[in-house]
Amino acid sequence: MGLTEKEVWEIYPDFWGRNVWSGKKRRAKPYIGVGKGWWPLIAEVMKVIKEECETHDIDIFKTDVKEKYASLRIYINHGTDKVWDAIDHAEEQSVVTCEDCGSKGELVIINGWHRTLCKKCIKT
Ligand SMILES: [Zn+2]
Image (cartoon, rainbow, N blue to C red; front, side, top):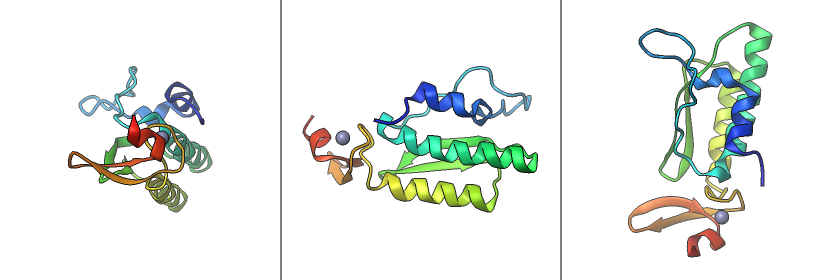
């Protein structure tokens, strides 16, 4: 198992984003509704974003992170080529990574919901 949600936020807290009205950095962590199996994928993207922000003195933060059509979607205010590549890679990995546990997963449809899960998590 990879990093926990808490550890992921510690990598790059500025990824939390901004208050849309004041533009100030958020103090509270936003809710991100994806399973713990995908948090290591988010962590990889955050590492790249942090490096790019430090290298180019820019400010990148999330506008939304969610599951859509059984894959991980990461939306940001703006990015660099390296950041977009990292986001594409995370999305590609998410379609073969169990959202619940991080093992090798595949697309399943449960009661009309599209999910990416491993064989073990399908049963539970
Ligand atoms: Zn699983």
